[in-house]
Amino acid sequence: MWGETRTLHSAILAEDRKLNILMPDGYSPDSAARYPVIYVLDGAADEDIFHLGGLVQFASMPWVGWLPPSIVVGIANVDRKRDFTYPTSIAKDKADYPTTGGSAAFLHFLSDELMPYIDSMYHTDGERMLIGQSLGGLLAIEAMFTQPRLFTRYLIISPSLWWDNGSLLKGHPTGTLNSDTVPSHVYIAVGREGSVMEGQARRLVAMLRKDERIRVGFGYLPQLDHATIMHQAVMDGFRWMGSAR
Image (cartoon, rainbow, N blue to C red; front, side, top):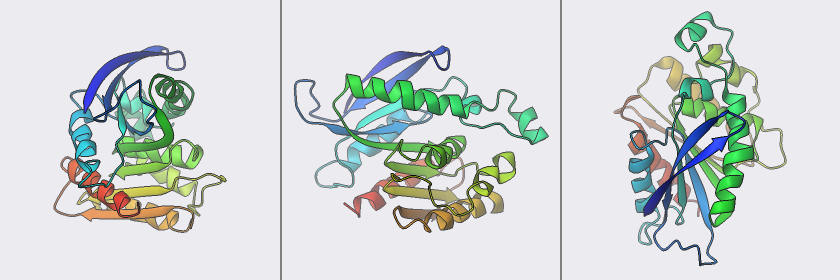
């Protein structure tokens, strides 16, 4: 893979956002070939872009074949606590996350600015995956519930569904997405991270499996915790997605 860094000014967020973009081997602006896009939250150079880019490269090698060759877009953070959380009524949440509550604007940025920009600059094919961990997983679930047409696949690791006393799941008790278009694949993983996080991840899986339109996978990795789960969980998710191809 080869890469480049771009800066996109967001009128919605009123700030510049840095993007780390990795291209699959053989990508050429002169080619008619088109590629799916994998969007990575926490995508700065000192966050997840490079090790996840390596996993994408491995998973898309012809002799592995879990993923098609893909463009990877890492979105560097400015204030992840702001961007990945919706407003909370819990006083402790507000105290611990004083800039909280900007997820609606961030999703607006994704749908109306970032994705059109990527589609205009690169040869994309309309397939989009979102990878998010922790608060990024919370944001991914909010996107799936509120804008189910936005991504075709989700890879959600250790989602912080405890946010606002678990209101996101409470607001969607059936798990069925209210849309004619839903993601085709959702993979959720959690490690040994306490009864609240583990239980809510399992509850999300059970809810989503009620929607027969979505293929839902789940991984429990008791040998790993919140700090160590990301790499293995993403590899497992890619392998699971590849099994359905």
